[in-house]
Image (cartoon, rainbow, N blue to C red; front, side, top):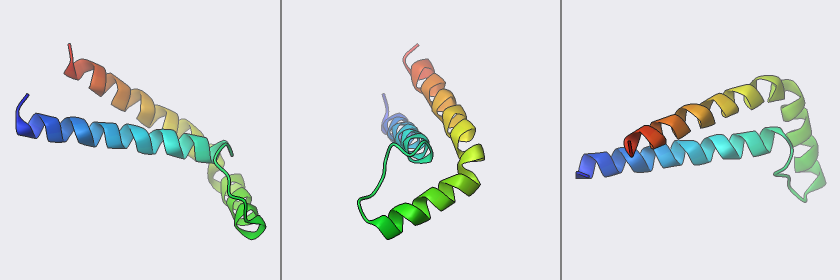
Length: 72
């Protein structure tokens, strides 16, 4: 693998990690201990969770396919 391919692979891994984090955040698996921040988080997820879940799953699927095709 050349240097630019390695950079592309690392970027795909970062995008996959961001997608996993967004999914876990939107399903309320990742939470905070501070009650004020938790209330704000629940309000944010209540208003934006409907589009965050499917889009994060789609991003995970697309990046996973890209990572798999890199090794085929």
